Image 1: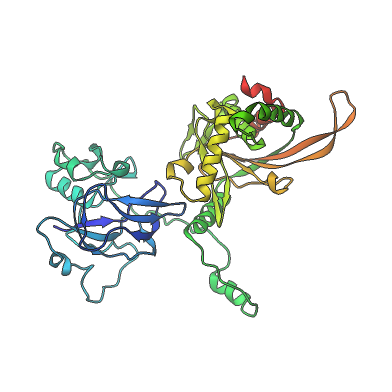
Image 2 (image 1 turned 30 degrees about the vertical axis):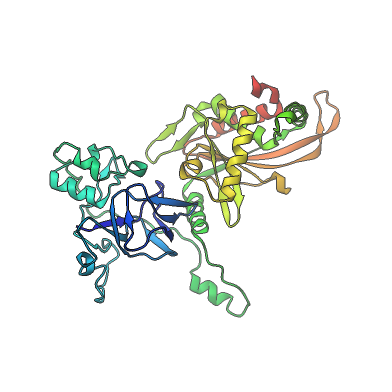
Length: 428
C-alpha cells in the first residue's frame, strides 16, 4: 500500500512551512535517514529525513510552495512490488475536478486513510502513516510507544516490535465550544490599498518570519498584561573592570562586550530572585532552577532570540563565545529550533544604535524582557555628595503581571542593577 509522506512539524510551534527544495525525484529509491527535502519554517531552513523505505512514487507539492500545513500530504512513497498505477486512481492523483472542501476538511489522501494522529496529554503524537495503520490493525496505543524516528517520530519498526494493548478512549468532544475571538489587526488590505490608491508605492511580500513576528507580537501585546519598570545604571566601574579583563584575556583572543556582562547580570539576578525565574503556562506557572536567557539578534527582515542555557553557571568568556556563535548562525538562519526556543527572560539591546531608552514587547512564554539603552555621559551626584560626570545606562524591564508582581519585578531589576554596578561580584 502506498505510504503518504506528510509535511513534518520541525518545531513544537510550527503550523505551516515552505517546501524549499526536493533532494529526490520521482522514481528515486529512498532509505530511512536519507535527506528528502529542505523545509523552510518562519525561522530557519531545515533538512527533512525519510523515516520509511521505498521508491518515490509521486511528488504532490512542488518546490517553492508556501503555506504548506503540517500533516498535509506532500508525496507518496511506494513499497516493493508497487507501482505508480497503485496511486493513479486516488483522489490526489485523479484529474477529475476536486469537490468543494470545507474549512475543517481533512487533507486529501493518496492512499487508504491512516487513523488520525492521536494526542497524549493534549499534545499531538507524531507517527508515520504506515505506523498508524499498523497500530490500528494490531490494536496498539501509540501513546504508549516510544518513537525512534527523527524528533521522536514513531516509525514502522516501533509498532511492529510493540506488544498489543487496548487503546485509551479518546476524550469526548466538548459540545458547543465557543469560537475563538479573532484578534483585531487594523484596517483590511482593501481599505489600506484604497486609502493610498493615488500615491506611488511598492508592495513588499511578507515572508514567513515577518508574518510570524506580526502575529505573535500582536497577540502578546493584546493578551499579556505588560507593566514597565525603569532604572538608570552607572557603568563606570563595569567599563573599568571590562578594560582590565580584556587586557588579561587578549592573549586568548577573547574580548568581552558590555552585553556579555548584561547577560551574566540578568542570569545571576534570576537566581537571586528565583520567584521571577518563571513563565506563564495557561493555568499555572513553571518555575525554573537554572537561568536560560534569550538575547534578541537582528537579522535582515526580522530577528531571532537565541537562548543561552545555564547562563548563571557559565563564565563571561564562555557566554561571550557562545553568544558570538549564536548571533553569527542566527544571521545566516542556521539555528536549530531548540537554540531559539525556551528561556524565561530576554534581553533587547539597542544601546549600540544610540537609543537612550525604549519599551520592549514580551515574547511569550517569557515573563520579562530587559530593554537596554545606550551608556551616555551624564552629570551625577557622587557618594561624597559632589557633582561629577558618569556613564549612565537606562534600562526598562517589561514584565508579565500574571507571573511577576510589582515588588517582585522591582527586586529583579534592582538585582540586575547591583550586579552591573558591582561587576567583580559576578565572578565570585
